[in-house]
Image (cartoon, rainbow, N blue to C red; front, side, top):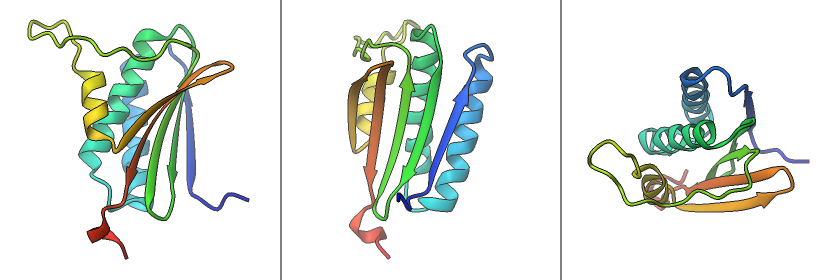
Length: 133
């Protein structure tokens, strides 16, 4: 049996920006309860970017998973697209291209795992040694 705290949020792709706001709100609450050691700004930026990418680049659903272990935080976004995120050259004229680079820098590790129904993008943070209880 898995004793780790775990939250799953499923949203319809038809509500636009409210999806991202709901994911950020749920993540902030989860961090307060289960990962007070995590940098909330970094985690919330990663969640926002991953949800925004799923909304923009997926024709179907997406699902957010938040899992806290004793010394880890895992944020996973599953969606219906099999295509992995692609790093683009950032544009200073409003063309984007910053998000995937930001995700990779803010998270400890980032993995993209193919799934039978699409993919899972997973960002993991490890509790800093100074924050251990």
